[in-house]
Image 1 (cartoon, rainbow, N blue to C red):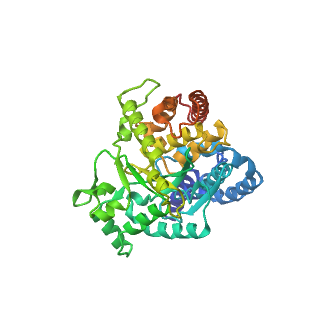
Image 2 (image 1 turned 180 degrees about the vertical axis):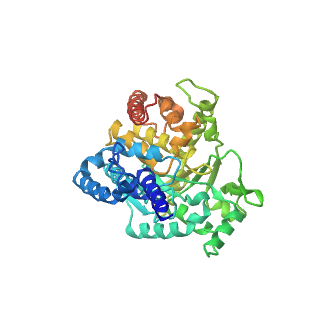
Image 3 (image 1 turned 90 degrees about the horizontal axis):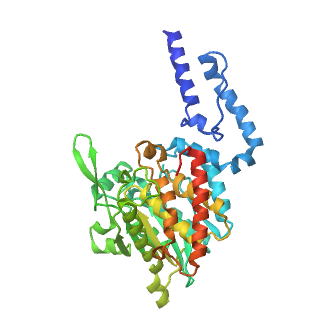
Length: 426
């Protein structure tokens, strides 16, 4: 029995070492082409795991610059991990975040908020471009994150991710999150953590301190249900529109309901428009209208407070990792085409920023979606050239021809990256 037990243990260690999503191998699998050498039998290979780990760590340190620039290797590792959280992918995420920070710093300062394992499917550091922010504001935001995470579904709290500079000088922040937890579900989770507060006050203060003025709710229904063991299906998520109490609802400014079809409605579309794409584009046109007018009344009356942004728009669906990155990435793309965001970045650099940060860093489940035939990432790239229409303008100061050329160049860059790392045609 001892010999059989050792063999079984060795087989388990070998599978853990060779599995891409393993905690141990995660620290070294940044080059997706790397494979463990075949040395001896299963037992010797499992015991040699730690030796190879140390040797490869030295090689990684010597070749760190090339790894940091090899964004396609990073993207491939994230695409393979899709369907799992980032809680055990810290080393790859750290390289990703350095790349994202370098790109954002080309044009503006970077707001960095520490996640500190509050949300397992968020990156360790939330980054967003800002005009100017004080250290006291960052400290206040970090404190609010600690108390607001239980208020949002899957603990995906309000995270700033982009900034659009409008023609009148206002800076409008773009935030992403999941929807609100149902009251009963939030109460139970707070009890499990030994807490009494619901997190609503911290969530509302976080929204206000960032400068939030509008909320875009993408959910098709006002609530979501999930099966509970021994109980049945119960509500687990709701929206800001259905919070109990007028004061709680008013804390989020204007709440706009833009119902958007779930990810299961995004088949393997080509470049041919369909009912799904028409509905999605109509919803994005409405979001552009909301963003253009966000905070306009406060700016006209001169009542802007000392917030991070002059105005802010929060976009969320149920979980915030399918429809939300679709619209966030489109906003970033249109703003770049109109030179209202990241004006110093080339189309290739923008493609890297969109894929690495808007989609992968916030745990978009690409592999799971593609296997089921609902590749919403591919959909977002295929219909990017449709955003040249006047309905999708954010500033109105860029010539239509220039906007078209920049969007088409960005689409070509995204197609090249997507086809290279996935092998699928867009």
